[in-house]
Length: 239
Image (cartoon, one colour):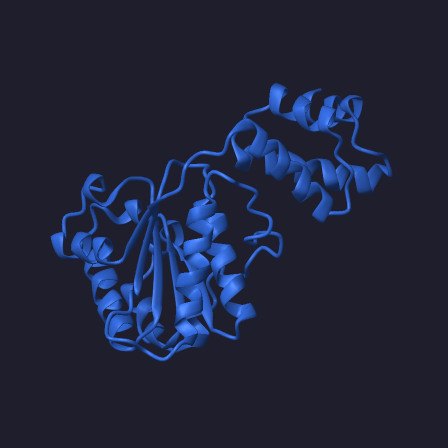
């Protein structure tokens, strides 16, 4: 299968999901390690190089954001990268992995979705081995630790445990507040602390929900040429 057919998947990166926009002091060790891991892809191969990185954490902690950020960082370094999610992959042929070992950094999201699919688990295991052979890098995320994933292919579990294994911890409310204000600023929006706290109080505290709300407010603000205030939020989101 050619790379052209592979890249017909939804692989375009969100331009606002970078390491800079991942505002989490709690997880700064994880982000620093991810950067170092990607930096190593530029160096001369060493016998002790680590080629795999497994990130796990609850839904909503920002694992997908970190994958997008990793790809964006790799591109800044002049490395090729690709980010795919098993939410889309599991409905396709495993042949989509053919030739991916030539890419410097491969990111695969939500491996727990193939916990009961032996064919896909074997495909990930085989890709992992080819990545090692070609001295490339792979980052895989899941919602549980390796031992709790319930994989039916023990060899894949072993591979996931071979490299870096890091847990992404939930953001505190203050970190979410900072993150939502930062993302608003990136869009050219002024979101005061009072307004941001109102969003978190009246809506879900999940970052995905908050960012969805911000996107809706951004579009409504442009359409109606109004600032984002508490009355405006009530009108757009709560009425």
